[in-house]
Length: 229
Ligand SMILES: O=C(O)CCC(=O)C(=O)O
Ligand SMILES: [Fe+2]
Image (cartoon, rainbow, N blue to C red):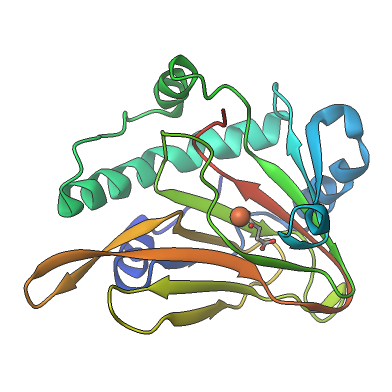
């Protein structure tokens, strides 16, 4: 994996609930990852978003064993994120702490019955979009996740921007658009994040989604660290 400035990432996550990792994957890795979409044997299920009211477009959850580069990426991204997640839990007064390596965290998920892999590939075509949502799949929630844009905006597709909203208690929602290039990753809060207020820390709820594709095809790789029931 490329060298990531985790201090900067932690700072952006604390301030905004999301952080960019530019160039996490190279062009060839992005092309190879997007091409996996057409290999159904690699996946445990396919979701047509319009059938569930999730938006329009489709995605597939990978089956175990994950393709080796994806497994390696999930394993490598986890430890620095676990540090941030533990600090967030402390700020929020939540007792759960996350182990230092992903294998140990997955063992915990599996013991709780959350045994299905959650990494996914998404494919959007013209007119497709992803409604604001949270990727919660059971009691156990790792509070940060990663999405990597595999396509090139302005070349492969137009529109289709990654968006986040933040619902603060008794206040109006704040929206954030995260401009991504091919291979760029966004790290973001799965459900809650701590915000420093004048009278201590409070939690805000975040949701993410994708605005309507104006043209072309857009592929994304989603990396979620808890497994699903
Ligand atoms: O396509 C995207 O950019 C967002 C995908 C998504 O919802 C996810 O990775 O959880
Ligand atoms: Fe998602």
